[in-house]
Amino acid sequence: MELPFNQYGYDPYGISKKHLGFFMTVLSRLYKHYFSVTAYGTEHIPKRGRVMLVGNHSGGVAIDGAMLITSMFMELDPPRLAQGMVEKFIPQMPFVSDWASRMGQFTGLPEHAVQLLEDDRMLMVFPEGARGTAKLYKERNSLVRFGTGFMRLAMQTKTPIVPLSFIGAGEILPTVANLYTLGRLMGVPYIPVTKYLVPVPLPSPCQIHFGEPLFFEGDGTEVDELIEENVEQVKMRIATLLQRGLDLRQEDGHGPSPEQVKAANQEHAAKTAGEGA
Image 1: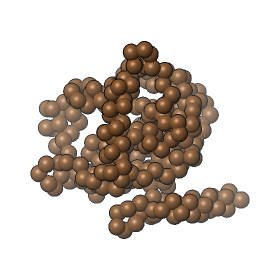
Image 2: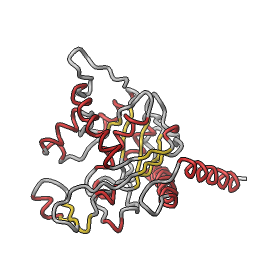
Image 3: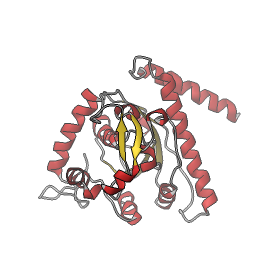
Image 4: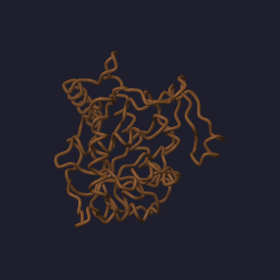
């Protein structure tokens, strides 16, 4: 991993080499053996340089974010660290706060994200925000409203967007209801409620499908209508990746084979070329 650690083991963003190694050891085991994550299309992710990973969000809590971070560490050569702007309540949670800061996940102003991209790092974005993780089990594979800030940021910094779909997070913590009032009292957006007494994450197999990079011209100061059109393009691309992944998912809960994914991608490319002719 190409991070500029100083003699004390910290990089300019406060990332701890020691903590990073510990957390990645734990997360990699969950990635491989508990959630059985399979990643497809990682060849679309730049090995170096600024890039924004933009995907769907679900699962009650941000387990999909943790697994996406782990995927960039496990699947890329050299590994890359995906950093993101976490929800404002995260710093109030003792263990999670420490994990987030030492792993390079940050809260703060958009200027911090601009600096990160100008330093040619990888930014992870879930435009659905807490609205995404609040999806109920029956809504787990749907998309809700996307925020637009990520698009202005990508255009301002000339950053390519790699769309992705994360499948399976909504089955890890199958939420049947959300307690919003109790959540506010506890300093979080909501408390997810599951069918079982203790909401322990279930070992549900997950798949991540990455699409080809998207590029948008402009400087981020464009009118809202244009920004929203660009956001809709990203959302539709994620919806396509999501539906294709669901179509390929085997009935026994395991993901598609690489051959199935390759065939589906070739079919989609041929269809797209035919429509453009």
